[in-house]
Amino acid sequence: MNQGPFSLWVYLSQTPLLWLTVTLLVYAVTDTISQATGRNPLANPVLHAMWLIGVFLSVTGTSYNTYFSGAQFVHFLLGPATVALAVPLYENRKLVVAAILPMAFALIVGCITAIVSVVMLAQLAGLPHNVVLSLAPKSVTAGVAMGITESLHGDPSLTAVCVIITGIMGAIVVTPLMNALKIRDYRARGFAVGLASHGIGTARAFQVDAIAGVFAGIAMSLNALVTALVVPVLVALLVR
Image 1: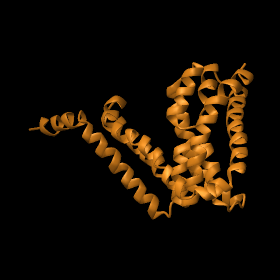
Image 2 (image 1 turned 90 degrees about the vertical axis):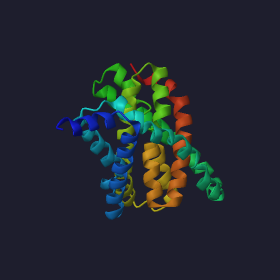
Image 3 (image 1 turned 180 degrees about the vertical axis):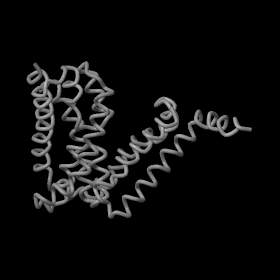
């Protein structure tokens, strides 16, 4: 009888459905808390869902591979969710076209700044060569960033962690920072956070304003493309 609950846990812990359920429930709880706080940046549901699930996996001794066997279904939906950004983009196409030149300029400046700043700071801090290479594409979405790091012979796993941290930090600071700078244009606010903080920042932008979300989605997509082209050149010039 004493082995009953333990045996049941061993069985459930190996089923993908358990970890899918845990992921969805934890996010639902953290998102509810975020709503209750009026979408306070510090109550970011992604941030708190991450550490809660991490603690749960650590306490239960569950490996990441076992967890991901269920969470991969959520991971799969990242692709369709990204494609779905085309819907609000199409609905606001006139507004987007009207701002095409400022966006192009901001994209180039933002992309180069994100790469150069992190590479230079990492080298000034004396970080290993492999770490510097892995940090370079930190401002683009994880799938693209990891591919870029592989081409640079860096560590894709480290890049994935840096991408997530960058996204969460951007989502937390964007609203108070923009308010402090008195930037009221939601096109600029959204584009800035999408460029710097990819998908997590874009999700935050949609929580704040639909127009901000549209421009964040554009910045996220274009920055992934431009960064893939620019990173090899800048790394060759900057990394000693």
